[in-house]
Length: 246
Ligand SMILES: [Zn+2]
Image 1 (spheres, protein in one colour):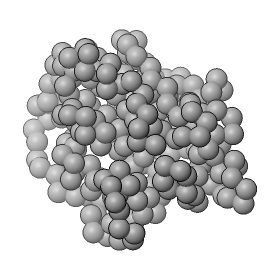
Image 2 (cartoon, rainbow, N blue to C red; image 1 turned 45 degrees about the horizontal axis):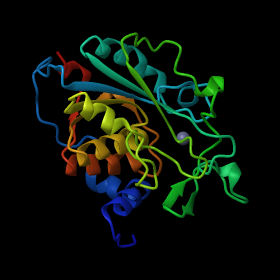
Image 3 (cartoon, protein in one colour; image 1 turned 180 degrees about the vertical axis):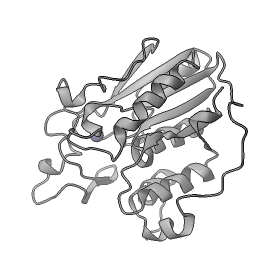
């Protein structure tokens, strides 16, 4: 593995690499026992629902195994939160993250972008398409904000906070901070990409950060899931289950 010069680059390589990390970290990890229903979100807490869109469930263009199973859990969790933010992957046609945009490249291969390595995906979540719509069974009537991301043609954005160039903010940090929110609970799709990058950026921005594991599903590309959990654990992201929420 190349030696990384910056934490950002390091993370990208980490998430993109993997068999070794998979063996080292294990999927189970050590989880402290916690009594059910002991975490009570308050007025300074926000639920972030990442990319629960048609593209990422069965029948979509980039289905995440079991992706639709998070919907009822997230709907239930929503009742515990005053503040809910939803994100949508929202790409231009011919987006730089699509394999079809790069001659000779296939989905799930990696290419080099000006901002670093980029996994190439099938065309997915194109702006305004049914594929990019939120899952029809997602019921979040109190959600106050939808953040669309990945809409710059030449830059991907796994994170709900910062685009993949690691410089361009989406505005979400400002929105949350301006509203006095200090703690975020991240759910949605996919655990090892958009959820993980969102959670890692949340930590870096100073938010207390939880990932509600059973309200996420992973792509797990070459061990990316174990690598993501290791990164999140090292960054102080708390790994909990939906039953931990009061
Ligand atoms: Zn995307």
